[in-house]
Image (cartoon, one colour):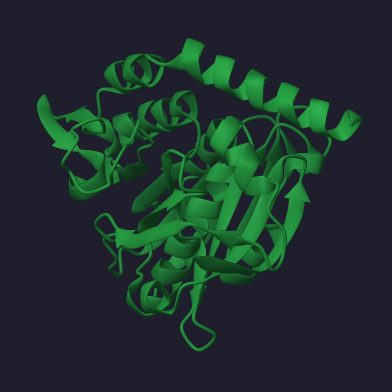
Length: 281
């Protein structure tokens, strides 16, 4: 069992959870993730390690409650326990001094972009961050991203905060200003990452994305997380999760992620219905 040290909502359905996991905290690097099983009958889900504190022996994850398991996880509070937390898994982010880097997080993808932005800053890069959300109330980790940035920008789809528009538009604005950008990291919804890749492609800017395919065990055994990169089959859990954005087959990734949508929807609805019944008793 893994004890939850603290749990708090950052925005609607988005919760920051600090978990007691000393061995993982000591070994974790930027870009890696854990596989979590909420209880003995639950499924395994991959979640990126947003931060860690080796001295306290804790890791931090940020969870968006979308399906049954993530909603169950977000129902947990300080002092509760989680059955399994396995990691750190995946290849760490490739960190070096590139020069000027742009770290882009879309929605809860900001939680994944943040630790890599920290590592890139420590490596001596000039760090620009773009934190995108649908609206002001869904912006997360603004203070943390600003602290690690030489320049920090917020974008909202509805214009309720920061730049009115998409992260792609802010990135294009930076490119059009004539400044040299040496490296782009983009993490968020699949359409966003694909769009970022198309923005940077004509300029030959090295661009990396962290992929989010269906994943079962996180060790390469099941093959569920296979993705097509440069026309070759890769496993996101061991070969990634980060890949060259200009080589990723985003259509294949999107199609595979939709395979179990009916079952996922049914499971989530059943969970909500059960919760409502319990509340009404």
